[in-house]
Length: 474
Ligand code: UDX
Image (cartoon, rainbow, N blue to C red):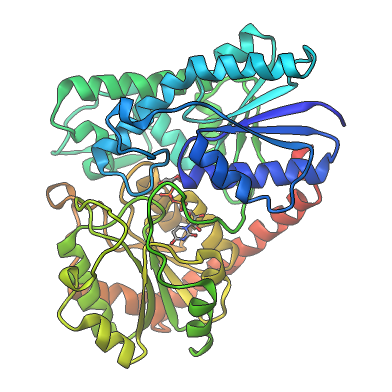
């Protein structure tokens, strides 16, 4: 198949990774297909480095983007390491790429001798591209990088923001899915910014994204049909007349984000060597994704609970929520005194600064469970290896992913959120110890969770084989 597909991911690691995986799949299935990946200059560099052997049919183009125009530190082109207000700014700034995108598209068409691309596949946060595609008569698809269940709940909330009732007092029965109740602590964080103008600006931004998404010609999802039957049905109820294609899992080994100066203290092999020294299924892996972290008192309690549980762990640590991320950091100030040394001496815990080879850790036979913020890539990576989850969702659709995973029986929620006054669960040392032991201690609940995780692993691996054969892409 000839043709030309444009791929346009949102500027966050959790979004870029599935797009790279999609590009690889498209290339494997149709080597003749030209694929152009578009992003901001720094992101495009890091995306390009994911293809060490240059492939003539995969092209990379960058859009000019000036972070400082949007109140962001220089070189910030990805959400990794941003403070919450900066993170929201980057979201809204992405909409200002409209004219640059249109210009670049025209330039590409001219260079291609006037031939139009056959399709634009844009991220769920860049759905304004649908209007541009429509004007040029180009087929438009949205790729949703999150779960179907989490996206359906997010869409219904976004469409009703900021008029959601009874924030901070009650649970909320969802407008389009009255059978589902969520607690106020699971509502979008953006609603709690103490600035009405901002809340209304952000709400209308999310509403525009959603309504544009509904105008796509097709919606692709990084999920697996057998695993997410209920979530897909919910989305079908919301999005009338647009075909949904669960084409996942779009999995791959991600590289560290390039836009923040992460201090990488350990190589992949050091983590794997450390895991090699432990018995099968004895190590807890802890990570809160590519961009978020828990707060300092939560870090203290988590550390104390881990030590008390006596379970081995690898913990990817970055500065606590609310503390600026400058690259180099000292851990002692946020952890109980002598914690790091004790963990090292007892060989109980390995603290990894900022970034770890997550997929390799989850694939290792010593890994028993994953304490995760329930970002969708992390969930798919964990379950594809049959690793059950201890949930600690921090934002976005992570709350609903955690709910879904609890219902399925592969997750126990330990904590929720990283702002004291917005969290309904206080994570204390005793609770950490209890939950870790429940999941990893060999008791009934842990055994059931493992069994279920293995069943889901089979589903995901089955779908992965289909995807690898190119069947999922039709
Ligand atoms: C974001 C949202 O938070 C998430 O809810 C949404 O589903 C996708 O976009 P993020 O928070 O980064 O993503 O989490 P996640 O989806 O789990 O993606 C993180 C990726 O970075 C994973 O692929 C993970 O393997 C990788 N990672 C993260 C590492 O390889 N090492 C790390 O130390 C941390």
